[in-house]
Image (cartoon, rainbow, N blue to C red; front, side, top):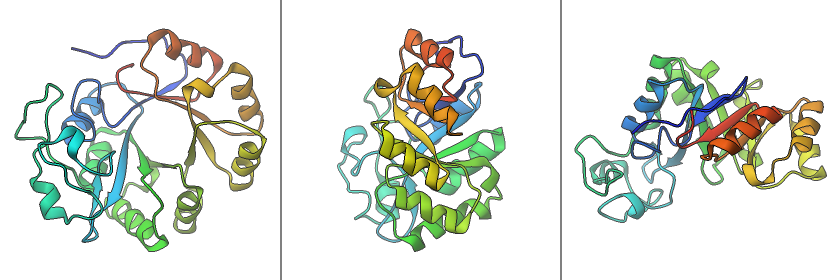
Length: 238
């Protein structure tokens, strides 16, 4: 199995939760699979555990892709580390485990890929600092774009990294959204069903970059690229 190649023009491709169309999402295997291909960036999701570790997982609990259903934020890291994740075929595999933020950053840095880091839920300001400090400890702040549905997370990132690229995740584009993005100097990460050629142009006219998620259809991906989307987030297109 391989990725689906598209005519992407100048659009930069981002592997959603790693190359999750081939490897189990948000695992080191998925990050390395993406890193060995032409992707600009590798997206993932970060949570804080009960004992203050920062782990990569999309859901609030492990049940969808693991043998046991364990809550992420209410569990300690040692428990989460022991959870057996299933492969994409439903079987277990010894190398699949819940990864730490630091491990992901090291993979991206080693292969020269951008970290597209989604802060899941609303973080306390001091926990944003923890995340920033982990990235600083890996000497890779220039390799990270932060994304979040919660604008307060992105504003708090800017308290510690004033010039850091950041994208607000959203399901819509409207005048209020445009004003919010402009005032806070944020780019946008928007669900693809909302995107039109006209609103991409409008956003660009205001100096806002556009990331379109999550696009797995080849024809749609090529259409968004033709319209000038700056980034496409995808599970399988390349």
